[in-house]
Amino acid sequence: MRISNFFIQTLREDPIGAQIISHKLMLRAGMICNVHHGVYTWLPLGLRVLQKIEKIIIEEQNRIGCSQVLMPTTQPASLWEKSGRYDGYGMEMLRIKDRHGRELIYGPTHEEIATDMAARFIKSYRQLPVIFYQIGWKFRDEIRPRFGVMRGREFLMKDGYSFDVDVAGALNSYQKVFFSYLRIFRRLGLRAVPVRANTGAIGGNLSHEFHIMAEVGESELFYDKAFDEIDIENVSFDEVERIYTAADEKHDASACEVPGDRLVTARGVEVGHVFYFGDKYSKAMNFAVTGCDGQPFFPQMGSYGIGVSRLVAAIIEASHDEHGIVWPEAVSPFSVVIITAKNDDAKVSQIAEELYERLLGSGVDVLLDDRAERVGSKFSDMDLIGITSQIVVGTSALAGTLEWKDRKTGERSLLSFDEVVEKAVGRA
Ligand code: 5CA
Image 1 (spheres, rainbow, N blue to C red):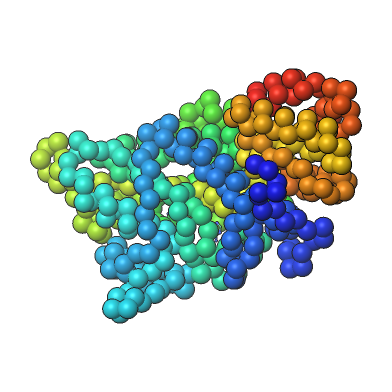
Image 2 (cartoon, rainbow, N blue to C red):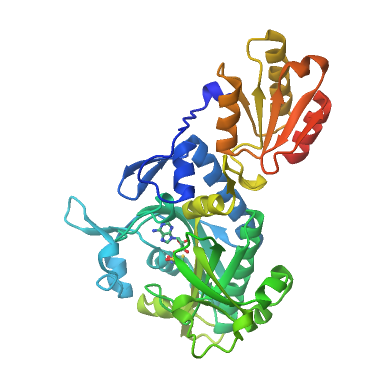
C-alpha cells in the first residue's frame, strides 16, 4: 500500500477526553473515530489490526473443529421470551420496534439465535458434538461506556456456542475452547490468565474469564503464584484447575487457602469469557434431540466469547512506549514500512520504489511512506503508528545501504537491498 492511497491521519497532541493510554494512542494514530456515545468507526489503520486479530481467531477456532457462521445483529424479541431472558436482561438491551410494531432487539449476545439455528438442523445425537462461532457486532447499552473501544456500547465479539450429547462431552468442548483461547492470546503476543468467574446474565455452572494484566483493568484478580510457573499449553485442564485463580467476586479473602506470600493480586482487562450452562437454553427453547436409545434429550451447551475490538486496546495497553504503539508482529497493521528519508533525490526515491515493488511482488504486507514531508515528522508518525519493522531509504541507499529499524528495541542494522528483501520476506 502506498501511503498516498491510504487514509492516515495522525495527531501530535493527546486528544481531550481520552483518559487511558490505549484510547489516546488509538485516536492519535487515527485508528478509530467516535460516532456517538461508546460507538466508533474503525478507520483503515485500526481495521487492519482488527482483521489481523480476526484471522488468528478464525485459524485457531477452525483448528479445533469449530464451524464459522454469521448471525444477524437484530433478533426477534420472541426468541428471548422463549428462553426467559427478555424481561430479566434489563436496561443494557437495546429494544427496537419495526414498522409492523414487532419487537426486535440489537443482540447483546446470541445464545438464543444459536440455539434456534441448531434446533432447525440437529435432530439426532449422531450430529453432535458441534461448535458454531461467529465474529459479529453486539450492542450493550452500558451505563458507563468509557476508555474508547475498551468498554464500548457497540463492539465486536467472537462468540461461540457448543452443543453436546452429555456433560462429559460438554466439558470436553469447554476445555478445547479454553486451550484454543490460550493459544489465540499467545499468538497475539499476550499472556492471558484464566480465572474462575461468575456466570452473570449468561447463567450456568462453570465459567472462566481470561484477563490481560494492565493497570487500567477494571477487574481485580487473585491467583496462586504457581500459575506463573506452569507452561500453560502443556498442562491438562485438571492441572490448571488445581491452581487457585479467581475474579474478585469469586475471591473470599477469609476462606482462601493460598498463603499470603504466594497470592498474587493484579488488575486485569477481561478479553475472553467462557461458560458451561448445561441445558439451560436447549430446555427453555425446547431443543430436543433423539439419543442413541431413541429417547429425546436436551443438548448440553456452552458459550464462549472474545472481545475482539477490546483486544486492540488491551494489546496497546500491554505494548507501547513514550513514542507510541509497539505492535506485536502478528497484529501489526503492516508487516513493514518503507520510509523514504530523502524525497527530493530522484535516485533515492527510485530505490524505495524498487524495494516496494519487490516486497509487494513477494507477498509482503508493506506500506510505502513516500510523503514529501519533513523526515523527522515521518519518523515520529511511524513510531506512533507502531508498525513492527521500519526500512529507511536515505542517501546511503545510493551506496547500496539501507537501514532496518526494529520498532520495539529501536535497534538499527545496515543491510544491503537484497538482505532487506530477504529479511522482510522472512517475516511475511
Ligand atoms: N455469550 C457470552 C459468550 S459468547 C458472552 O456474551 N460473554 S461476555 O458477556 O463475557 O462477553 C464476551 C467478551 O466480550 C468479554 O469477555 C469482553 O472481552 C467483551 N465485552 C463485553 N462487553 C464489552 C464492551 N462493552 N465493550 C467491549 N468489549 C466487551
